[in-house]
Length: 170
Ligand SMILES: [Mg+2]
Image (cartoon, protein in one colour):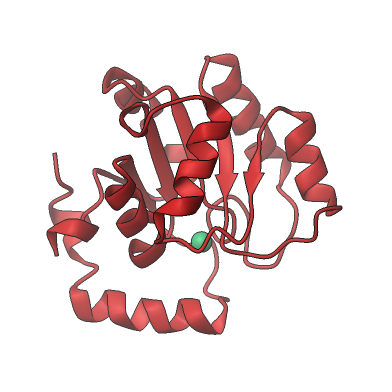
């Protein structure tokens, strides 16, 4: 249980306390894509989300996107993110640590200087904690999800997802 308790929780990426992360030494943020930055299979970010990312970069945070999805290399969203200096690691296979390490390497930061923001305990939070990052759990944007994710949700419920509301770890 302890391994999947997030450090912070927020209703959405727009409401994460990024200053609290910075005060804990965070210099880089890895965002999950689907149901965190955009709805599942949307393949594009809305203007407020672009504005958020630009604002965070303007405040000196390095950003990356870490997704288990397999977006083709020429996908417009990948190009748009890369053009803004936001590297994307696809097919990350979270909770395995490989993708986290790759993203951290691309940003030039250590795990202790990074946070991951995502909507799933079993991929984003579990993987992030294993890799040594601070973790932030947000509510999924939509109830529509892939089959493996729906399975993970069932496991999350069995593990007591409610604990995130009562007692995020310090
Ligand atoms: Mg997600």
